[in-house]
Structure formats: C-alpha cells, structure tokens
Image 1 (tube, rainbow, N blue to C red):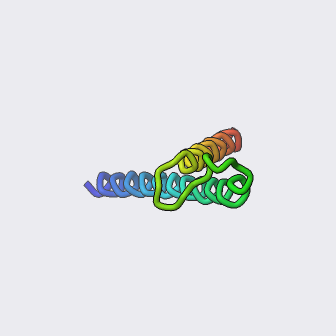
Image 2 (image 1 turned 90 degrees about the horizontal axis):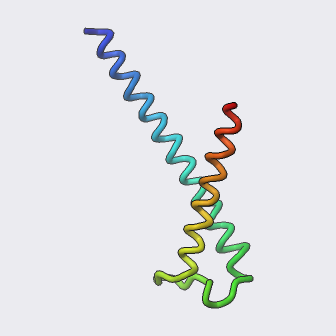
Length: 83
C-alpha cells in the first residue's frame, strides 16, 4: 500500500515537472517571438503587415507564426541535445 502511494506521488511529480518544463519552453518562445516581431521586424514591414493594438490583423498572425517557429526550434535543439 505504501509503495503504491509513493509510486502515485512520483508519477504526479513527474507530470508536474513535464508540465512546468513545457510551460517554460512556451513562455520563452512567446517572449522571444514577440520581441523579434515587435522590435526587430515590425518597423521594416509594410503597413498592412504591422499589428495595430486591439485588432486581429495580419501582424498578430505573423507574430504567432514567429512564436511557433521559435518553439519548434527550441524543441528541435533540445532533442538534438539529448542524443
């Protein structure tokens, strides 16, 4: 019975650790992607591709795509590091 309880706790801690690791990767991807879009790319983009506050436009979709690409690069780098 005691072994079952400890096994359950270890599984819960492992799931929590994986969750926190995934959240950290997502947070880093969003911060880096948004920084890249808003401070590096946006000043050089045409007006149609710039984000306007409080609107859903092409700019916010470009920002989301950049964040997704950075998340993919983080995942890829971590997979190569494990090998």
